Image 1 (cartoon, rainbow, N blue to C red):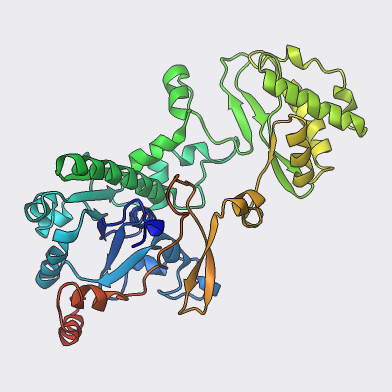
Image 2: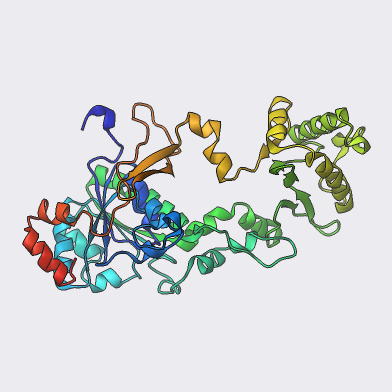
Length: 424
């Protein structure tokens, strides 16, 4: 491979045994240039049935979830629960650097494929295990879904509205956060291996990964013993009673969507200047006249009453509804107002910033007869080429011949026999 095409993990191989719990981990390692071989059971991974689907056609080869989470992988079929299947897997092991799996703790040990078994064959092997609750603890063998997982990780608690029960986030956060931590753990273990030659098992808990996303909720409980909860488009300042918590709007409707806007004053000089500039703009067009001489410098969020915040916000909301989010953002950038648009996917596709950084990349799907735009890589490195996907997600058993025949030396006739016996 030419120097212009060198990738960070070029030369490293990953055997991906995961289901949907860990697919993202292998995908990102593949993005970074590793040779990722996705190993599916004969007939295909169950996650191929996860929607949405290409052109809304339910089909195991048209899952958009599969397309994204298995980008940059080669794919083979193999039933490791059979004796011959395990033998084939172990023949792939010597050339591997990382094995990623998401089975129930102890499952691979029961097959003779646990970390200690694998390390006897390949002492430098890294086994990254991504499970809902980790390899140990009273919940280690509990089964879960994304909704149950984010609930037990505390994420559902901080979504929703002040007057509603907790709500789920619409994308699979439980598994995706676990997958991201799986990448981090794998990379640290790989670094350790490069220095010492030693492999290790990386034990990833999706629950613990989700807890890391709660930001200040844990700290608020630790310091103030207040259980932070979902408050929708608002922000809550936790205060003793009286006066009690202060609820401030952060997401505001405008003429064609929503914007994020911070309002305030007092010692928070940036927010104060922003609020003053917003009111001055509105005054120049005949709006917010009741706030023309408002003393923002005297605003104190520790003592201000909720009714006063509600009065200010109701006036500002009327002005924002006279403008589009593009108009608001353009003026805000030029006049030091802390405001930004809430972008939807259509906005992101058309974003001049993302276009300038070549974020969206087209991936050819020859079997579909078209190219599909994918989100690219958010990081650029000096001296390395820009991110380019090496391949679209694999079809079922697409690389069986390539791996089993060209690498392991099987004949095509033997491959047919393995398939007939449901080993591949």
